[in-house]
Every structure is written in structure tokens, then in C-alpha cells.
Length: 478
Image (tube, rainbow, N blue to C red; front, side, top):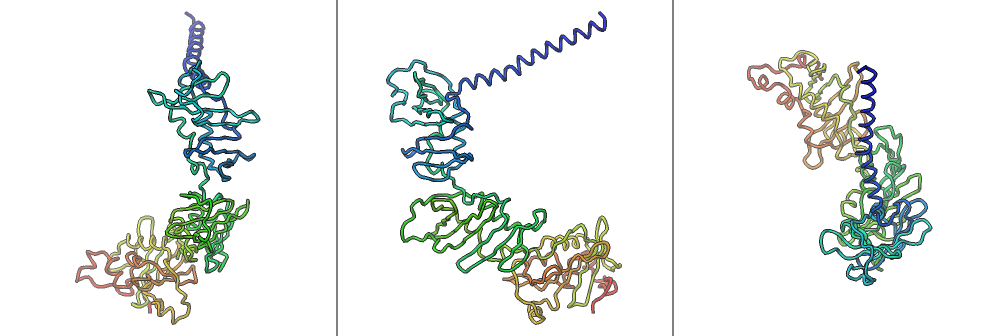
């Protein structure tokens, strides 16, 4: 056979193969989709439902309506914002409700199917049409199915998988919007917190591209703890109420008269207000646009401390550790100073020492300072106060520089104090901070600590090894 004939046979085979694939696989998918659509009982699309009426587990009925913007709201038995996820789940379940079997010619007495007047009924409004009615009947004698019926002439009875109807008779509270804060944390531009004592802080969002996106503007101007504020807003936006108080009892304050915490959260859409209080070991919240008091978990109250320090920036020294190429440890009380330089692999003393230095220990100093956050603040400013705190002179002064000699920052530390931590100050703040005592595990608090922990143990512990002199260290203090 010629080459042209062979190519023609190959082309025919490909066409036939493609036809088989289309019919067997693609066609099967389409047929399955059509069969599933044909089994749908109500024949509605979820997005077209504009109102619902469902039976409640307690015996009442709930009516839900969708506003022009697409948001759901409870209209009966009370007026309340609806939980969008809960209502959407009901609507999807109704739209996708499919029959397993059909009883085409049912008897006049429907009570054996549990479809008498006493059974639950769901009403669905689609567009401008009259309401569709879905009757929820009894379980079938065998299998995990249930009888349902559609109020059409003539009526038809279907069996459906029982689990597909479980959410169609919910508890009332399951339909209520339990969100505490109905705002998007990413859209908040200003937040303020007050307590009975007055303003705790007011903060504004600044440059969204900056590591410090928030700034405290009152009662003082200072950098904010960006992570702390973002976590606060995220906690409030994601938390859910554990209960509702629709009719607050007369004479009870619920911890809200006045509120123990009051937040104003501003977005482009307006200001959202939240008030928190405690009474009898329970926490209550009152929020903008919520026609009831919400009961919330105690952790929500604890997430909103009324201490300004909690919200201000607590980073003592900001460092890009990869830029640090020179580190100096100064011990003013001992008159000693040691300088180290870093290459791509390790640290080495700037001038030769008689005793080797553990390079990893020097790395530990850099990493400890990079992540150092304050645990408290001191009001001291003058020389006498500094001396009283142990900072004039300090036990140790750490200076960090880049490869070109640019100073990246310095930190001075006093000795550990059991209850309050170590006093500290840095080149990047005029504040006197308190930092954790265990920082002394990474930063040597004096010459003795340096020699015991930073020098190679095998040599430093040798009684015959001479101690380093100021000249060995690279330079000497006074």
C-alpha cells in the first residue's frame, strides 16, 4: 500500500477513536449531568431564590428574605441578620435535592408517608412566582432515605437521601449571624479603644507597604505593634457569639453600664462600635446593627487588654541580621572591649586572641537582638535614674555595624532582676525598656560571662592558658 493510503487509514482511525472517546467519556459525562438534573425535585437555581420559610426544630417557623444586595435576613419569628453560610447551605440543599425513587400515583391518605398536615413544610419563593412547597415526611422503612412531596397537581411523592434534608429544619440560633464584628480587617483605617478610665489608644493605618502599617496617634504618638493590632482586628472579625440575649433584663447592666471596653473600628463604609463587659463570670457584647446582646467567650475579652503598652511597638532594636558584619562587645565596668568580624561562614576576632572564640555564640547575640521585644517600660531619663537602673554604666554594650562601617545600632543592658527583667536602652529609641532576663543566656553580662561561655572551653578551662589582655581583644576601654 502507498504512503498516501497508509496516512489515510491513520486519519480514519484517529477520527473513529476520537468519536469513541467523545461518545464513551465526554458523552457519558453529559448524559450523567442531564440525568442528575432530571432527578432534581424542585428544578430551581440557588441564585434565583429570594425568600424562604422553613420549620424550626422548636416548632415555630422562620422566614428569611434576601435583600437586593444579596444579603439574607431573618424576618420572623424575629428581625435579625441571618448567617449567610447557614442560609446558603439550605438554599443549595433545596436546589440540589434529587429523588432516588418516585411514587407516581400515591393514595389519598398520605399519613403513612408522614406527609399529613402535622409534618414540616418548606416554602420557597423564586423570582415573582408563587411559593413552591416541599413537604418533609417520615423516614422510609429501609435504607437511609426519607419521603418528601411537592405540592403540585397531581402531588408526587419522592424518596431522597435522608442526610440531604437534615438542615431543612434548623434551630433558630443556627440561622442567626453570630459574627461579632461585621468588617473586613484589611479595610480598617482607624481603631480606638476606651475603658472606664478613658482613652487607651487611638491608632491609624499608614503605608500598607510598610512593615509598620499602624501608628498610635493618641494619647501619644509612637509606633504601634503592627502584629498585635492586626491580631486584635482578626480576632474580632472571625469570632462568633455563643449565645443571644434578645430581651435584656431590667436592672441588669451585663457589664455594659458603662462598658469595660469600647472599640470604634472605622472603614470606608463607616464606624463599627463594639462594647464589651463582664457579669457573673460571663462576657457580653453590644455591636452596631445587632438587635441583641451577644454572649461571647472569655478569650475575646482577654484579647482586648486596656493597657497601652500592649499595643505599642515593643521591638527594642530593628536589625537586618544579614547586614551585620562587625559586632563589638563592650564591658564598661571591666574596661574591656572585643570586636568581631564575619565572613561568609563564621565570626572571627578583629585582632588575634590567645584563646579561640566560639563563632556560634557570636551568632546567638545577633539573633537574640534581632528578635528582642520589650516586656515593659521605665520612666527614667536622667543620669541618676540611669545609674539606679544599672545603665550608667551598663554591664554590656553591643554595637553592630555593616560591612562599610555604618552603625546599624547599639544596645546597653543592666543586670537581671527577678520580677521585672533587665533594664535596656538602644540607639533606635529614647525609651528605657525592660527585657526578659533569659536574654543573658545569649548576651554575656560582663567579662567573666564572656570568658566562661564565648571562649573555646578546651582552652579557656586550661589553667595554663594566659587570659587575654586588652590589646589581644582588639581595643581596650578606659
